[in-house]
Length: 305
Image (cartoon, rainbow, N blue to C red; front, side, top):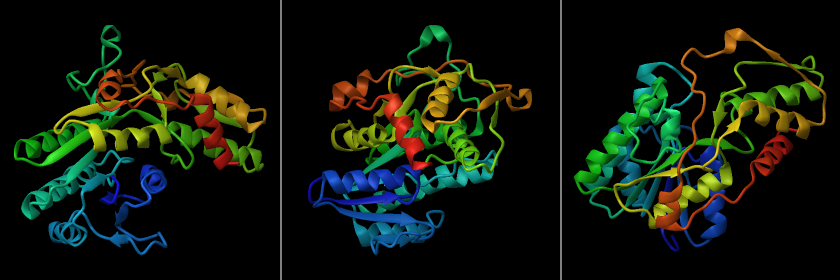
């Protein structure tokens, strides 16, 4: 990525912010351009663009002529099918079509999701990239559509790879994520804005958590060394119970908190356990997770203190 032009859509988001900083530190001579619906960044290299508009998307591609596009912009925290489709599939179509029309030698990196796998029998864990998708939430469904669209454009000659990320922990985790919600409540309890208790759903479920820096390094690794048209799991390879995660967060907060189970927060289609196999990305790129989950939680809690 030395001396290359890199376009990051959604560069002001949770992952985009950290990915931008990491690329800037690792490849100081790279020209990093950002694309977001609104420029809340002071950087003159962040362009305001509506990726739902094909002409606006094509224009930013022609103007920046990127060597790499990290397409991180997308809609996550809703169950509205139209919003999910437009934010994840339509935007991807416009980018793929724009690169195809411009005939620019550019690699597109799509952030996939563990939600694409959905419910998997325990006997088939850890999940590898050949697992048949079985999503149980709308977001997982549209991410499968996004992956299918990427596969189609790869068959048309577009250079695209997918970094399928599992559950991310890191500073700035949004409150819509479980760890972000826990961190927000603990911060407010510490400030005496809430009573010292947290209402939770099912804490017995187990998830594969990965630090945001490791996740971003994984995206960079597949961008550099991944095989075109392939998907790669970016995961730790282990699962941890939500109760253990919350206990670590409470420990980092330094306060005493009562954890109260609320049956109304239990999900009818919740998945008991899921974790991925990261051997493919290790073999292809040399990437491996290097941050202990405890360290990721400490960084999250320090950010929210």
